[in-house]
Each structure stands twice: as C-alpha cells, then as structure tokens.
Image 1 (cartoon, rainbow over the protein chains, first blue to last red):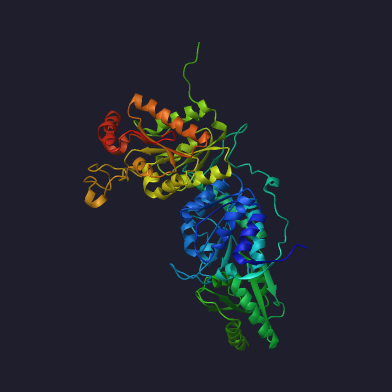
Image 2 (cartoon, chains in turn orange, purple):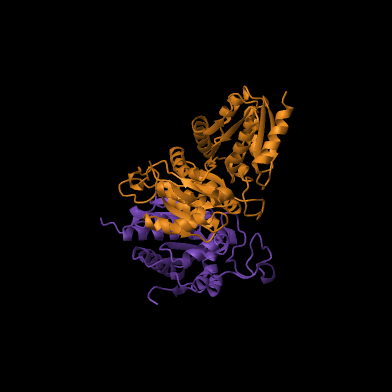
Amino acid sequence: MAEKILMKGNEALAEGAVRAGCRFFAGYPITPQNEVPEYMSWRMPEVGGSFIQAESEVAAINMLYGASATGIRTMTSSSSPGISLKQEGISYCAGADLPIFFANVVRGGPGLGNIAAGQGDYFQSTRGGGHGDYYTIVMAPNCVEEMGNFPRRCYELAEKYRLPAMILADAILGQMMEPVEFDFEPVDPKTLKAPDWALGIAAGRERRIVRSYDLREGKLELLNLERMERYRKIQEKETLHENRQTDDAKLVVAAYGTSSRIAAGAVKMARDKGMKVGLFRPITLWPFPAKALAAIAEHVKNFLVVEMSMGQFVEDVRLAVCGTARVDLYARPAGVPSADEVFTEIEKVYQGIR
Amino acid sequence: MKLINKKPASLVDKPMRYCPGCGHGIVHRLIAEIMDELDIRERTVGVAPVGCAVFADEYFNCDMIQGPHGRGPAIATGIKRSKPECIVFSYQGDGDLASIGMAETVHSAARSENITIIFINNAIYGMTGGQMAPTTLLGQTSTTCPAGRSVAVNGYPIKVCEMLAQLQGARYLERTAVSTAPGVIKTKKAIKKAFQNQIDCVGFSMVEVLSMCPTNWGMTPVQGARFVDEKMTPVYPLGVFRSPEK
C-alpha cells in the first residue's frame, strides 16, 4: 500500500502532476492557487523539469503552447480571472490539438470577485471557454486525494484524444489539508512514447508544423468535423460519476466538487430521518455523464441541484433528464452552503413529493 | 558546370505570397541561408507570428509553430526550455512584437532567454490593411490615422532596440535595413550573429530589420526602399545597441 501523506489540496495537485510525468510548469501568482507555482518552483528542478514564473497568465499559457508542442507533459494553474486571461491560448491549444493540462482553483466572481470558493466558472469550463468550437476535458475532484490523483487521468485522456484537459477545483479544495494516497506509481517521462507530431530534432524525418489555422476554402470545417468525431467518442466512453443511494430514492441531489461533499452530509441527515434521498455526483463535467443521470431519471422524478453559482450546472442536469423529472435548484452564487441548509432544502422538496 | 547559387535547403520550394517590394521574402531567404550555413536546419524550430508572416510556417523547411498574436517569445521560451538542444527563433512584425506582444518581448529579454528574435519593422500593419503601428512615424498616414500620426492623438513611435538596450538580459541588439544591397548583406551578418549567439548560449538576441511595405504605404517598390532610407533611418538609426563583446 502506498503511504498516506497529509497534504494541502494545491500541493497534492502539483505533486500529482509531477508524479504523472509533468516536466514543464509556467504560471503567475493569483490567490487561492499560489501553492501550486510555489511547489513547482522547487519540485520541477528536482525532477529535471522546467519552472517559469511568467510575466502574465497570457505568457504562461503560451509557454505551455510551445512546451507541449515538443511532446512533453506540461501544466499551468490559475484561478478564475487568470483562467479568463488564458482562454485565447487554450483555444489555440485546442485548435492545434495540443494535450495541455491546467487547473482552475476557482474563486468568487465575476470580475475580481473574492478569494473564497465558488463554482461560477462551470459554463466557462464545460463550454470550451475561449473562442471557437471546442471542448476541454473537465474533471471535478471533491477531496484532496482526488486533487492528487486526477492529473494522471487528465494527461492520459488529453494525449489519447489530443485536446486540453483541466481540473476544476475551488478555494476550499485548494486550501484544505487531508490525507492523500496516490493511486499510481510515478510516471517516468522517458518511458512515454514520443508523439509523432512533436517538434524538435527533425533529423531523418519531414518537417512538422503545429498550428491552429487553415485558410484554404472548406478545410477548416474538415478539421472541425474530425475533432467533433473525437469529442463524440469522448462523450461516449470517458464519463465518470458517482451514485449514492439512488436505487430506492424518491429524491436525488445532484452536485459536483465541494458542493457534492456538503450535499453528501445533507443526504446522510435525510436518510437518518428515514427520507429516501440519494446523491448523483458527476466526476467529469465534460464529458457530462448524461446517460447515467438519465438512467436515474427513469425511476426518480425529483432532483435537487446544489451549486455555488446562479444555476449553471443545473442546465446540464435539466438537459440530461430532458423533461422527465422535476429539477429544483438551490443556488449559492459565491457562497458556501452548510449541510444543515441543504438538508432544509431537501426537506422542503421532499415534502412536496406526492 | 559549377553551381554558384541555389535556393537554400532551409526554404521550402514554393512561391511566396508576399507583395512586390515587400521585405519579408528577403529576410526569409537570409534566415534560410544562415540555417544552411550553420547546419542547424534539422534542429531549428521557428515560431510564426500573426500578421503577413503567419505564412512563414509554410516557407521555412524546418519544424514550425504558429501561435497567438504577439506571443512568439513566450512560445519560443516554452520550446527552448523543453528542448535546449533545439535552435529556436521567433519571427515577428511591429504590431506583433511592439504592440500586443510588448510584455513578452521585454520579459523574454529580461530573462535573457537563449532565443533569437527577428523583428521586422515596416512601420505599419500589413495583413490587416495598413493601420497605424507602434512604430508608425509622426506624420505618416495610415488607415487609422488618415491625417497622419500626431503626438496629441497617437503619441510617439516606439524605438524597440533603444528601449531593450536598458535591459541587462538583452545580450545582442542590432538594427539593420533591407532597403539596399549593402543593407541586405549587413542584415545577413547580424542575423547570423543572432543565431550563432544562441548556439554559443549567449542569451537573448534580437535583430530589428527596417523593411518595406509599399502596398500599405501606397508606394512603388522603388519608392518604398527610398522611404526606409530617407524617412525611417533618421528615426530608427542603424547600428549595434548591445553586444556580448561590449
């Protein structure tokens, strides 16, 4: 068994990326993710990788664009306003099919917002985020251990399907400390196969070009259609979710990330009181586990969405159940609900169920 | 028969789409000749900008990457730090390098990234159709300063070499012009030094090349070359601004 280490979420995220083979990190300070670049500043040189404190988030994402074009595993991290700044570069990475990995340790927004936890970047994360037609793999951990273990899966999916992958966390997940057990052996990047598109030493082969444009009549659409097919495969094969006590439930609470932990506490309180309540937690937000949710909606006709935003995640829940169930929303835009509060909401909805 | 001249192996054998009298083709050829002479083609990665030279990724016969407007030095940094054995150059225009990408220019110089930047200054936005550049001369007309660049509205042109010369990390800075045959020869010498510096791990090297854009200046190619010599060089004097020997 691997050892258990007490770690802060941001440090687990950084260490998880290093163990997954990351050898290039560029970032810019912003609260509440500062422990990530701080950790990488000494950890990268220790494993023979590169760390750069960039002059801006814009420069950082473009350093990744260059570094990942050489075929190595790269990472940047930021928090909401900084992720907005990176979006142009992320769009270029999507357009050039580069498998970058990044994390958004979300804070309250819009604008400068605050530095506490929020879930207001759901739309930005799950709908591409920058300009143009593309998606990003989005994984939503709800504990420090998952912060450490998800980067590996992000790299693998990003490389398999050639698109950016991200972890959507928040200030609570980034700042709290919990025991972590890494569920994989550290990856030695030397054992990874060099991709056949990577730039670098061209001796004995044709030159390679990494770019996100094609100005020739009709060609861009062909590129996008090919990408669309990859996205379809991802949606078909790569969703992850967690169901808790949904089989006999009359009401299922749907929540992701920090909200899902709070909701789990409230669901337990409801069960203790004899109410048949379950929990649905998507682990991948894109691809969204719509089929899994639709399967629950075949026998559960009441859902309560809990999110720390105005009603973003609820749209995907409503799309998935497609009018076959009632979906209520408890929204705390840049607020963190207590389990008691969520339990009160559960009671209200549950009492209305005939 | 003895072959005395040929197309460089570092240039792809295809027609370039630059306008008559434009300087890009000249500078592309110089870079390609230098890659051949230094025998670095197979380990060179070039960064193409946004602007007319976006197509540079089609013309250079080495690995190429095209990225967001102004971010060439950041992209080059990412490549060079990941693959130090590669020779990395960023090819940029004046809007790209001195306007939208100024932060990346200044900070890559401050870090003395061991990269080579080729900066084409033609005092105008070419690809978008002749708008004012950060290097447009006072009084010079453009589609966004039709009455001529005025200090009151537009402020002053930026002298990039002079500005970067204040930075310790900028190891080699030279300004040349490709408006005359001797100027082309001097430009080649400067660009070759900027590449040799990288091979020798000297640090940040940039050559600013004053170049012609007759199309957007509303001139013939001959008038364009004269404009560089008569109007641009008084504002942007040619010479070495920093060198590792100094």
